Amino acid sequence: MTVPALPYRLVATDLDGTLLRGDGSVSERTRDALAAATAAGAAHIVVTGRAVPWTRHILDDLGYRGLAVCAQGAQLYHAGEHRLLTSVTLDRQLAALALAKIEAEVGPLALAASRDGLEGEVLVGAGYVQEGPLPVLPFDDRAELWSSPLNKVYIQHPEMSDDALAQVARQAVGNLVDVVMAGAGVVEILPLGLSKATGLSLAARRLKLRAAETIAFGDMPNDIPMFGWAAHGVAMANAHDELKSVADEVTTSNEDDGIAVVLERLLRG
Image (spheres, one colour):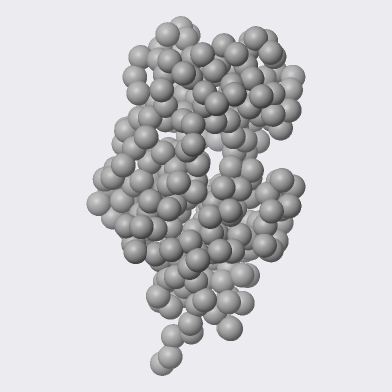
């Protein structure tokens, strides 16, 4: 039996709002479409803003054994070996300075932070709204934020929208760090120059694959660099308008098997 050809050798998918449905599951149709893509010779790489500790259980449930780009590109994780291959940490002195500059513009922020490593905890301070069942470690003293290596710092404002906060924060920090909006209530301070694109390019090199062979799926502004790197960027119907504006196409939503819709079409030729 002839296996259909796929015009891309690398399929990169974000998790939340893209591969995952609202209840955190992956539909059978999407699982089948990804399986068909890999049977056709493509590699599937998960590229997520989540750090490894918040990603591993999803990959294990999927039976995923390949590489995963985590923590907005800071971590390259081998799911089959449960091993962290590379990790980039945030300069804590620069992060503290950037945070002070942002708060000088907008006032006090609610904070959280993701510690580095396979078992890195997510610290959550007073007033920070963390949705969902993912495990967190509360903190009271800000000094606790800087006591161990970090991948990122999360910021929330009691009144400003995520988009407004991200815009003001970028202007305030200059070239100290990067700031991205990764989802509802999720504005992040990252190492300067780090993005999903840098992590994906590192993973692709390990697989001896190129940007020109890559199709990427996403839903938030933090996916923009990945779309810029890949040959073809597909935004979900539920995606942020900023991402839709740079996408090569818009598919159906994550609830309506948007990844599968595109992959099935491509496999049909």
